[in-house]
Length: 220
Image (cartoon, rainbow, N blue to C red):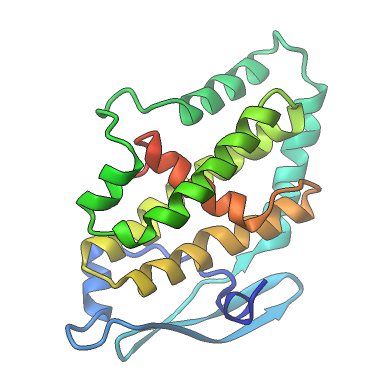
């Protein structure tokens, strides 16, 4: 993990509306800064600077998330294939790795273009490909069925609650990237690792673009 990412770890409790974000982003300064973070007993906390306004971030407990994920994996592995809970998780996972039926599929490039984020396209394609390959290879492995479902669902929630408001307020690419790392990539990487899964941070990053390509995540 880079020094910047270590500094940015976990703003995942942040839940701001577009109106909230607008208060913190000035027209003259759109640089996002995270500083003064502390780690104590697997709890990470600190602050974010939007323009000149410091926002205190809620605590986010990685260990608790990892414990929850580990328990879900253990329970899922013991279920019979005709158990309603087993069937439900598979249906939920399939709904996330297939195209969103309620939206027209326009593809990754068009999605990023419409949001003026084509600067992400090259790395997004590479990351999306990595994520798609891993999902295809491990989607029938019981432990990864739970991990994929957990990660994809968490990405959707955190993207909509934390990243999309920034995009809609006209935040810079740097701001958006920092928020993606702070609320999605870094915390999920640590949770999966602590729960016993093996998933690199670039695959988790790729799952953001995988969901974009499937029209589950929108950028504007």
